[in-house]
Amino acid sequence: MKFRTSLFLAALTLAAMSPIHAADVKDTMKDRADSKYDATKDVAKQNYEMAKENCKNMSGNAKDVCMKEAESEYVKAKSQAKVEKKSARTQAEATDDQMKAEYKAAKEKCDALSGNAKDACISEAKLKYRQ
Image (tube, rainbow, N blue to C red; front, side):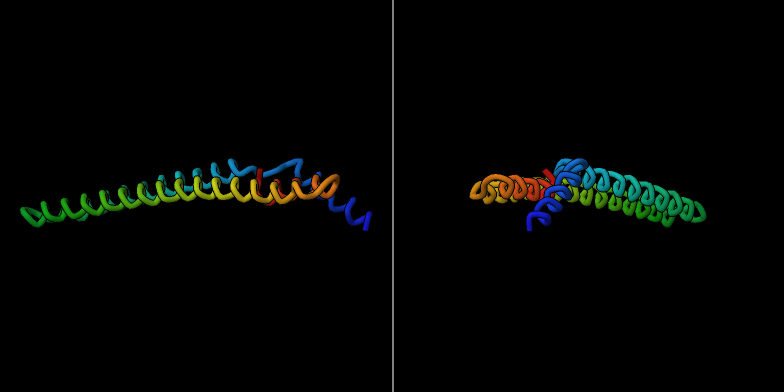
């Protein structure tokens, strides 16, 4: 039993040497949201350019309608990308808040313990909730 506890503490110590903090998770989620937004915006721009190119073969009112429809699709795509980016950023902040709250609750549970058991409990909570 003592050997298992030593292995457990050694594993926790090793894992604690390079922890992933909640802030890192939030930043990663925000970075992904930004990247996806940029990519979606680029695709929307390319689609818009292709649609405008297709409109060049038309004339009169048909061409005007085609151009306005192309512009409308472009604006819709950019707006939707913006909504998704904000939603992803909000989700990242919510995840961060949840992890912090869960860590505090787990840490409070550890207060009932003492010595190595308490230390191990707190280390486990830090790893689990990335604090």
